[in-house]
Length: 476
Ligand SMILES: Cc1cc2nc3c(=O)[nH]c(=O)nc-3n(C[C@H](O)[C@H](O)[C@H](O)COP(=O)(O)OP(=O)(O)OC[C@H]3O[C@@H](n4cnc5c(N)ncnc54)[C@H](O)[C@@H]3O)c2cc1C
Image (cartoon, helix red, strand yellow):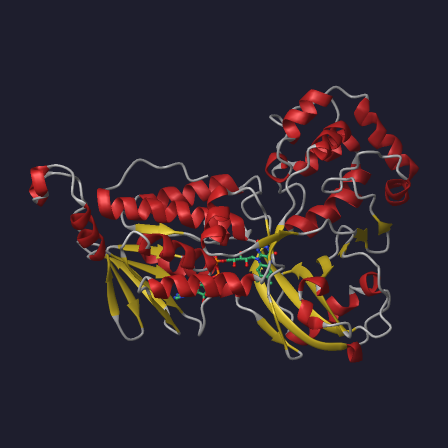
């Protein structure tokens, strides 16, 4: 890597002290960052580096930027491949969206129903009921489940310090029926994993303190509900607008974004790195890997050694169905969750989020455990799962178009095992100056997590290039 600006007189800065602004600009221009992957994480990292004047090159193997956020074409409609909502609360992510001019609107609470089990009461949190005697809850867990859940109020409190796993915590406090029939379907729908994988405090922030304070899990949920988290936000013009805004800002800063250009290898050199593509070797003072997990593993293996355990993430298949809406029931639930053991995690009616769809069609998104099924078989499983959502069984003639994509499970980053995996990955990367990594598979499967993490990583990279490495800024 080239010498950073340290203020040492060896660099010949005026007065032999701090560099002046011209020195900094020239120095920044002479430093090249190569970002591999033009999904949202890579584009944000590239923008953050280019904004301080670094020379930035972005490579993406696909023929367009945006990665998983690139839109899909179905039945003549251009639709967001993603659900279009992001978690609020990450200040870096909110600042980026604001600077990019991407307006957000809050997403109304969804009406959730259990497939074959009817609607949920609506005041539960991840399936944990506030009132186990509510008729909707009793219908699902039965009288014996209700009595067992009621014992929660009579048992001594248990702090999450002793039980971090959501599933085990619920089972201990409220019994098997609440855990299996309510929390498991809701955890699968929201976080695409089992409650025993999930860190209770990461998915229900404040639950441990509330449990200690109120002495019961139902009481803790009731207390969290009294101070609800801010609603999730949707981008007013969809995720495509975020990608378009990033593309424009990168162009304005003269960042080269090469699509259709796959990075096939990275090699450490005496000074910096060499990034290899099919037709060129590019010198980089710093490399930011912003691909998915599997591609990151391939690129990192020659540098770091065995990375298989580090890049192992759960993935899901997402099937978007555009269906004929004539004689389809209106006013049903927005989200359908599925009983324990189902390979389908959730089915969501996202029609209202795509105004161009019109009244004759509905857009339904089904999320399933990743499988090797072919497209037709996967579409058939997805279509068969949505009966309770559309109020009728969906014959193939009603399906006007289908698209399939794969992404990391939403719970990535919130599982009990994740913080150790993330720390191990970061520690291995940290040992290599000028090499960094961003992306949903490491930061968390939520766009807000990814943006915040990309901002913090880019800050470390540019600090390293301009001023020398500093101690870890504390990436969460
Ligand atoms: C259907 C779907 C629904 C979603 N819904 C939501 C949602 O509602 N809310 C939410 O917050 N998030 C959602 N997400 C998740 C979110 O879209 C992703 O987590 C996020 O876009 C991942 O961004 P990324 O930059 O980490 O990776 P990606 O978007 O996967 O980008 C990685 C890029 O790297 C490129 N690449 C890979 N290997 C190479 C190589 N060797 N050389 C060059 N380029 C390479 C790929 O072509 C790709 O463009 C959804 C995702 C999908 C697919």
